[in-house]
Structures are given as C-alpha cells and as structure tokens.
Length: 183
Image (cartoon, rainbow, N blue to C red; front, top):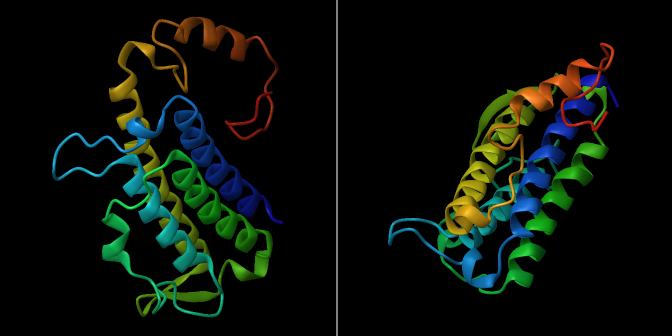
C-alpha cells in the first residue's frame, strides 16, 4: 500500500476512533437524544454513515457508489434504538470501508469511478468520503460533548494543556509520522 493510501487509511481510522471514544462516554438515551425536532440523533447520523459507507464501498472500483438498493431518506428515520444496534451499524459501515481500502493499490488511485454518474478519480473519491465522514463524526462528537458537558472526557488536547503538550512533542527529535501515531 502506498504512503498516500496508508495516510488516508490512518485518517479514516482517526475519525472512527473519535466516534468510538465518544460512544464509550454515552448510554442509549444519550445516543438517541436530539437537540430539536429538526436535528439528528447520533443514532440517525450513524445510520446515515452506515448507508453511505455500504453504498460507496461495496464493489468500490466497479459499480456506481450510489447503489440502487440504497434508501438514503430512510437513513434519517430513527430506528436504531439501542446502543448495541447503533454500534453494530457503525462497525458494519467501517468494516466495509476498510475491507475495500485494503484491496486498493497505487495504480488504482488514478482510475475513474462514479458516484451518481459523476466521474472522479479514486483519489478524489477517497478525499470526498474522508471529508464527509469527518463532518459527521464532528457532529457526533459535538452532540456527545453537549450532552456530557462537564463530564466530557476530552478527545484531544484538554483546555489549558497546550503548553505542556507542545513541550512534550518538541522534546522529541524531528521525525516523520502521522499525527495520530502515538510516538
């Protein structure tokens, strides 16, 4: 796997981990909480991500990323009522993504694929999906942080700890690594 594919895969893993670490802090009721009647719950966002991932990553290089069997509008109907079901949907989507990525080779990056009959390179599609998933994981984290308030366990550098964090990073020699590596 090329460095480009490895880095993209690490980015996807990073956003999945942010979701995982949010879910660890929440119970079923919190995962179904909605800020307003027009808002989506975490369960609905996960259901949408699952539908998108299964559609985009199934037969990734050979068929349109918007599959005929996908029911996108149904993804926003609140049916994943238990934390167990929400997490199963979350895992199934990411599993499909990572299985597809594991098959990609450098020469695939410049191939053209289609999403809703619009052609783009595999590399462009990877970036498109990464941005889409980061957007929704950000929503999930925001909802979790809103619900937990002062009981929230920070997923990045805690407030007031930037100086200490930077001192630790700069105390090490320069190195090449992905930012999510714990080196």
